[in-house]
Amino acid sequence: MRFVLTCLSRISAFVCKRGVFTIVLGLSIVSSVYAQDIVVSEKDFTCIRDGRQIRNTFIRHSDPEKLKEAMRIFENSVPDTEYPVGTFLQLVPFEAMVKHPREKFPKTNGWEFFALDLSEAGTKIRDRGDNVVNLSLGAPCLSCHQPAAKFDFVCEKKHGCAPLPFDDKKFVEIQATDPRCPKK
Ligand code: HEC
Image (cartoon, rainbow, N blue to C red; front, side, top):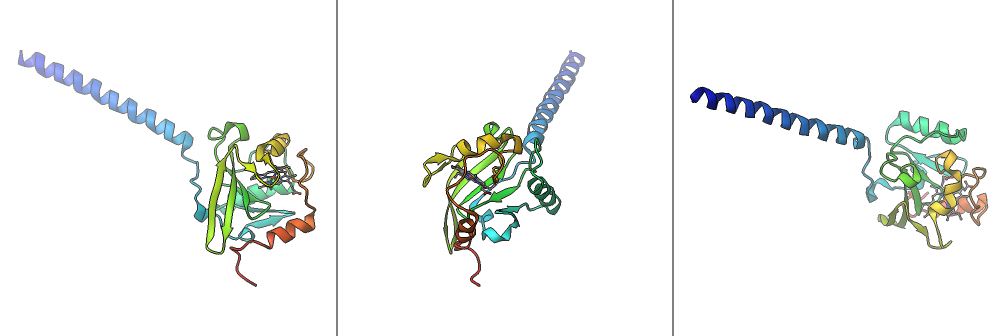
């Protein structure tokens, strides 16, 4: 009898260990799919000029190698190529696009749009996600950026997006109004 009991408890311990092993393995596979995602909070938004400028756009990434890669894709308008997760793009101080893994926002290849309220004290996030609307134009960000899907939703001038009602001089003026930048 004792033998049978010992045997049973050994078997259940084995089955149990395997169960735990399977659960741990499953969880680690799930977390590795999402592991490279980044968490974006208000503190991540600072003076627009803290980014590196290419033409009208400011680009940043906390990893210098990935910043280089993002700048290469942007500079050369490389088609069918995704920006590294963690890339921040800004044209105007009060809006941004941030790249997550594509599963997080499948409609936009992982880009999250941001509408920001700015003051000298810092940044408040007014709206975020893949359904953000530009209130002054009355249009969702994605409605204009969608035609540039071949360029990972980056518009610039020649990727098929409806143009913004501003010329390049106006972009420079708007960028200069960022209240978070140090006073010159
Ligand atoms: C009327 C169409 C339109 C709407 C609406 C719009 N954009 Fe854009 N966006 C553009 C165009 C066109 C450019 C390129 C401007 C340039 O470089 O001359 C651009 C550029 C940008 C850039 C710089 C990178 C790039 O794609 O060239 C960011 C970042 C951006 N927009 C974010 C947003 C966010 C966030 C929203 C919503 C809150 C938004 N946009 C709404 C048309 C639009």
